[in-house]
Image (cartoon, rainbow, N blue to C red; front, side, top):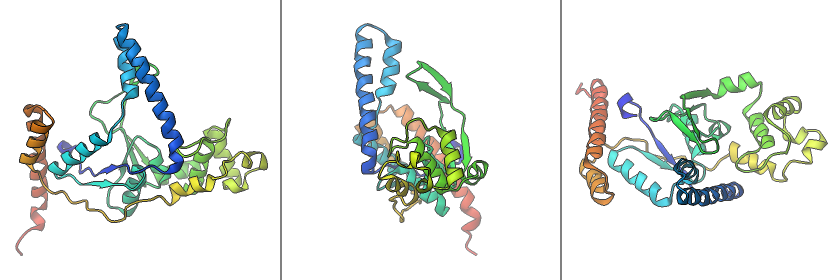
Length: 275
C-alpha cells in the first residue's frame, strides 16, 4: 500500500454484539468440521483436500491481533480499536470524512452507512474457495452508497430492512425470501412494520434491535489518525528477535516505509516554510 502512497488506517473488531453470538457459534462449528476433515485428509495423503480444509479452518487469535497492533505501532501506522463491529467503526470514520472510504470484504459496511466501500484490496489477486476446491480472481470493487441507493430506489433504512428480511450476522432472516423479493417488499410497503401480516408475523421479535445495530452502532468518536514515523530498531527487534522473521523480509518492509515517509515529508515541504 505504501508503494502507491495509500495511507491506511487499520480498525480492529471489539466485542461482538450479543445477537452475533449465534452466527459465531455456527462459524466455529464449520471450522471444527474443517479441522476434522483436514486431519483425515492428511492421514490418507490427500494434500489437495487438506489444503482446502486448512483455509476453511483458519482464524485469527487474540495473540495474532496483538502482534499486528505492535507491528503497526513500530511502522507508525495508526489503528483504531472498535468497541464492537470494525465495519461500523470504519463506516463512522468515513461518514465523518476522516477517511476516504471503508475497506472490507463485508457488505455490512454499506449497511452501517459508509459513503464508499472498497472491496478486495489485495496483493495476491486470488481467493481460494474451499467448498469448490478452486480459486477465483479478486478484482478491486468500489461501491458508492448514494449510487447504490439510487439504483435500488431505496433509502439506507430500507436497505437495512431488506437485509433483515434476507438475513444478517444478527438474525437468520425469513425462509424463502431472497434479495429480489425483499427489495420488492420494502419498496412496496416502506418498512418492516408495514409489511403484510403473513410476512410481519414471521419477523424476529427483536428486528428493531437488529435494525438499530446498523443505524446506531457502538463506535469510538475520538481517535488519533496521525502517522508517527518508523521505529526501525523496535520493528527489527520485535520481528527478527521475538518472532523469528527473516531479516531480508524485514529489510524490505523497512525500505518501503522509509520511502513512504520520505514522500510524506516531500509533500509537506510547501506547507512548512518559515514565512
